[in-house]
Length: 342
Image (cartoon, rainbow, N blue to C red; front, side, top):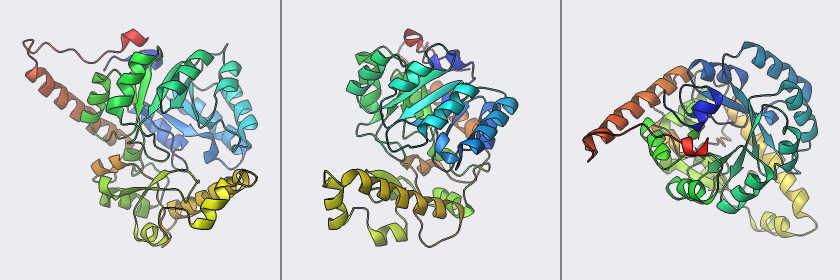
């Protein structure tokens, strides 16, 4: 057991969150994550209706053997937020990860409940804001993340947040190995949020073509595109992505800058982009727009969730032993501990 804020708070064996992945994360993956000694989080938007979402979350809570979380998009683009929040209040997941907006109302709603609120942040200023609001921890979304990545690498963002505010820091982005996990823990993180390595999991609901792409392509094949949501998002640079380009055309760019129209254009862009991703994720199509982060570099085969976790922890142990052997203090090196942020 690796002793960090994440393991101590949620009583899990390893300090890993299986990150919430749009269209990908499901209750089966979260159940397997708990069995493997980590915990998973699922986006509420992965369900078409609130009734389906509620039904699956009730079933998940009944059958899972460890903690789980729900990811909520908290900005105005999520018109389902109120009903999703009602479900969360009834279910009371172990934690909620808030993304793309102010978590204020979420924090207030769960003030007297056991659910922990973890907030996505990309810089210190936003971390200080959610700290003041009463969040329990911050998810440091760095430049290695899949989907909507942050602008700063983990090597800078994690220690900056650790030193600049008091909340526990969970590093998100760029980790596909145990060595990567060890590196962010030594930077002061209390755990890691890992997504892309689990896209090709056997329990993942996406198509075999999508999974095989995660095996075939690597870090150098990940590009940023603004065609999906209007803001930069990481995708695999397939022949189709190369064909359509990664930047909005002149008309799209002009409309997204128009003060009166930009809100609606961005919503339309997001809707059309996510529909394209959804179609590509679950069926064989030449219009392949697959979201992933650079950590697919370390995906070499389709494996079960438990095998992915076991591999990472074996790599972590090996890396830790190597670090210990290099220690100038007669090999006396303890596992990274984040007790200062408990």
